[in-house]
Amino acid sequence: MPIRSLSSAVRLGAAVVIFVAGVWAQASGLIDDFLFYWPDVQYLAIQHLWLTAVSGSLAIVVAIPLGIVLSRPSVARWAESLMQVLNVGTTIPTLAVLALSMSFLGIGTLPAVFGLFVATLLPIARNTYVGLRSVSPALKEAAAGIGMSPLQRLLRVELPNALYVIFAGIRTALAINVGTVPLAFLIGAGGLGELIFTGIDLYDTVMMLSGAIPTALLAVVVDLVIAVVAFLVVPRGVNPARQR
Amino acid sequence: MIRLDNLTKVFDTPDGAVVAADHISMEVPRGEICVLLGPSGCGKTTTLKMINRIVRATSGKVFLDGEDTSGLNTETLRRNIGYVIQQIGLFPNMTIEENITAVPRLLGWDKARYKARARELMDMIAMDAEAFLKRYPSELSGGQQQRIGVARALAADPPVMLMDEPFGAIDPINRAVIQDEFLKMQAQLNKTIMFVSHDIDEAIKMGDRIAIFRQGKLVQYSVPDELLSAPRNAFVESFLGEDRALKRLNLVRVREVVSGELGTVNPGDTLATARERIDAHGYRDAIVMVDDHRRPIGVISRDTASSRQGYCRDHTRGLPAIVQLDDDLRKVASLMFAHDTTWLPCVDETGRLCGQITQRDMTHHLGSRYRSHRREPTANGEQPRGD
Image (cartoon, rainbow over all chains, first blue to last red):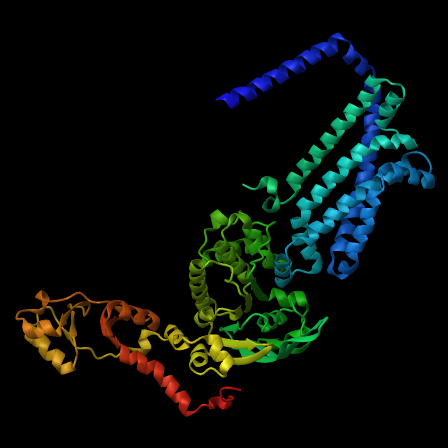
């Protein structure tokens, strides 16, 4: 079994490297350096998550109904052009959006939440729209044919069948959101960006990393949490992760 | 009972108005299956879908059991009509149980009642409730899915069903099985059914009546035998195909053609007796030998009877084949070709010999309809052929 022994050798090697790195980090006092920022990291991470939670849930609450409305046959004529407008919206760099919202809303949490909200809106709206549009016409006809009202069709057939795609949109959007929150520091909203940008300015690598590493970890954790929620919420029959 | 009164659908397209259904008037009596048949784009599906308003009629009315449906709310109307479509359209997010109880739940049945109904329906379509109710549509084969589709349509026991090429997407072997099962169910349920098909053989098999559509118009509406023996015009004739006389074989049962008188011999009779009877009945080649219960067990050929001595039991040949009273003539013809014979003995449900069926009888029976039509080509005030 050469492949198997090779991969176990690689795994062993990785473990050794990590162990050596750990020993080195401890010996050089790097861990103590990081721990120095621990109270800051805790405080800023909560601020960071709060910005994500507020802007993200606002985006979800607005984008899903928006996607639903755009997917209705009666607005089909304008839906694509409206989607293009939203698309243009995302091509504007988030930093520019933050700068623009700062010039209207001033400095602090409010413009940051607004900027993040705008950046997060589109992937969710787009996936809701596409998910609902791609529910097969036969399914909609069957739902209508057995006598479901338009609202029943939406709630019992269309949304459950589009849910997996909608969740994919939420995952993408929140990953973007968590990754963008550090920029909010630049307009005075705090978050882990405070450690990152200050660290860069002071050429203090440890300070910068104590902001950057938790940011990366938060992004991974948020993504995992949404994946778990999607796993539990999307009905088993239309959940690729739960097919036998 | 379904009655359509001047039902018309005009689609507005960029190239101008297209009349998809042009003043369709017809009536399906209670408990019958009416097959709407025609080439694609002929208006049959549009006509069907106007009944449950999936397509809104431009003008005209639909009556169900004598009641004008135009006053009914769309959801109420649809909940009282079973609907089966070719793409099946099971809801993939729901279990089989949730799928087949969809209409009862919309109607607000209590849980115990619709759960019991789900089991009853699974029995009806011969699927194991325990094994399937908790599963999802994606875990079922196409044939199983369409059985569930039919069960869903039957769930609230609607008097009327609309079926849009329901078995079109199923492979031929399974299709025949499902058709047979469906007919068996229909024999007990007596639903009034409109059934869209583009397959003439399916129409003949399933339909009590067949409506032929062409370019939005109803061209001919009659029982299958009449359709096949007296097509209204050249279009219907060509649509039914050159072999339409053979297709009629499907429609006629042995019961209608069998001739009762049949001379027989017993195993204990002598060959001389056999010879006498063959001559007396004027049989060309053989006589059937039966046991004490009149069950056919063999034949004595004319040559054997005239050239040998002894008892019948020692000189029999095996029977070529036996037909049942409920077999259709298509099977009989096939057996005759396979065994190179022009006659076959026929038995009843208990296996007792009850007569024979000959090629002459079959030809004569099928021909009699053509002869009667040739005498009165404008029967029932219908237009003559070739309009």
